[in-house]
Image 1 (spheres, one colour):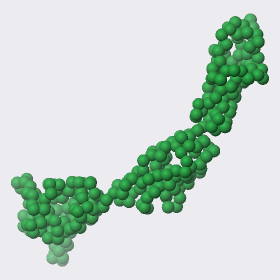
Image 2 (cartoon, rainbow, N blue to C red):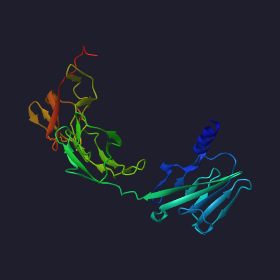
Image 3 (cartoon, one colour):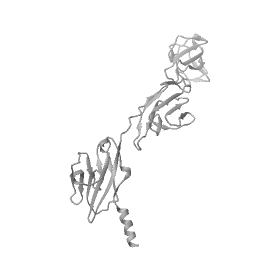
Image 4 (cartoon, one colour):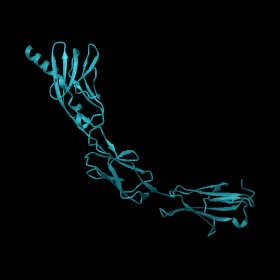
Length: 307
């Protein structure tokens, strides 16, 4: 039983190279992680190939003297950490292949070999939309992500989205349809992940969303109560319509059924006259969305009993 237990301990403690570390990315740093190393390790020696000859040594590290030594296969990009891991800066496709590590312990030597696969990141995916200008809640937009990747994510305003009542993502994840675009749906992106933990996101695709006018608000120099503005004859009266709209809206003013020549948001009556009394309507129009809203009020003579 003691011999069996000893054999299990030896098998468990055998050094190895972490398989998850044997995938490198071109132009990125690779780290071949050494596992199951005991504290009595004296020297770590990494070699290019399936054996540990002097001719194919890359670099070694001696723990007792805290010294490193480069070998014939050293390319000025490799190093050994104090825990025995091999690091490769700016990994190239030509770095793919077998790597062998030899670890000299105080009473034994162990070896492990692993094959480093080097992959190249695909370029950022391209994104296309059937339109770049839409009217809020009236138009839809269909966007396609051009990629061969199977993992595709979508982002609206830099936040990841999924299918819901407002938008639909196709079964292959490569098409996003926003059924009724809102004013805040300004940027669209897709993200691919052909290599785990190395996502590639497309450049933002910008939408121009036309909307409004929203509810018309009225700002005046006098208080309006129940739709009535009271002012004295000869006083100055200022009236301004306010509405949120894109593009900027057009303004029309109507007085007692007749259209005025004013085309700005604000009207100023420098000296109120009797003929300027009556009903006013401010119309706010967005020619692009073909929506219009208005606000009505009356100007009456201020009486002595009014505050």
